[in-house]
Image (cartoon, rainbow, N blue to C red):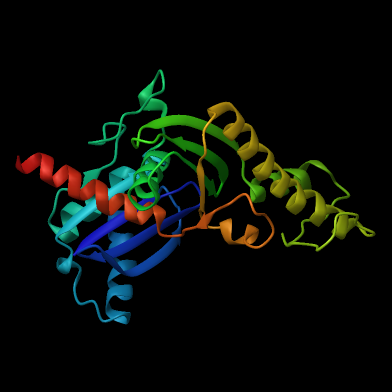
Length: 259
């Protein structure tokens, strides 16, 4: 079994993979101070609950993280409880040319998404990843990573607005079904939700115009489902994109080490 770990700023996903198939997937709040022992206790309970046996059934481990503080504990988790040295995603992914002036600035999550998107949909692509930040990543026809756009995430914007404006309540983000709000809550829902739909549509339109050729648009990330059915600029919604990318990167790295 492969354990693929994707550490985001808000949530961490642990996916248990058998061959090329994800058999279990669990999500946890990202807590950089969480120790290897704490991870192990939590994971062992989930393994038992889902009939997956002991942690020693994990024979391979790959980690992608945008939170460097978490890497130390996750490495220790893999070494101590799985008895394997984990693979760690860096900018130097086999088969992916990072075409920005400073390749090290490309976040691991963005590169993993680029790999997962390319092997499923080909290229060129725009990958819209909605999480703590909303990113729009450009993947070339040959799978190269060509940069993109980073904007604040929808929940981050909502939180900032609530904290900066004393009289504005914190609201649940949802589609108000209209643009003109007749109450403060409706006005906030419209501004946040419809504003983000417009951000997505406008940014995709600008990227396509600048790129100059047809592009497939794929949406992923924990909250991308919010936008299903409300915009026609997204061709595919794919929550498995990152895990698929981690599975493919594992295959490439293992093939490279054995050659």
